[in-house]
Length: 110
Image (cartoon, rainbow, N blue to C red; front, side, top):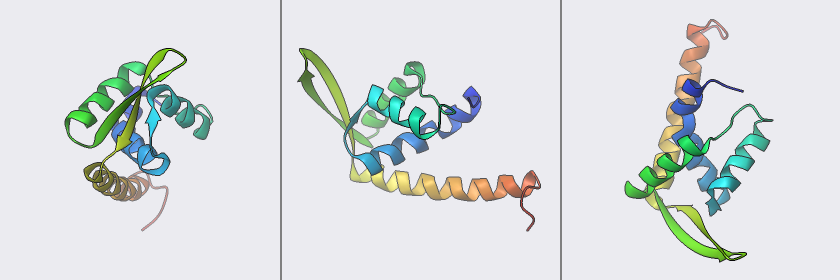
């Protein structure tokens, strides 16, 4: 599993991209999908995920919908157009960051 520092630095990018690709999801569903997609190397903890989701809602990047499932309320998150634009910007920024890191770590010559 990756360090908390790496996950913290990439969490917003991952969540925005996930919702941009998958559409409407709830928190546990996001956690499970990310863990499965990363073969257990990237784990979204509740303590990191839910504060971020609340912040993204507050910032207008996500909206929520609540449904009752098996007698329990479940909050779904869906990306907004502003969130979609931010997701694209963050993906591009992260791609550039990866190229820079490869150069800095001497993994890929110029």
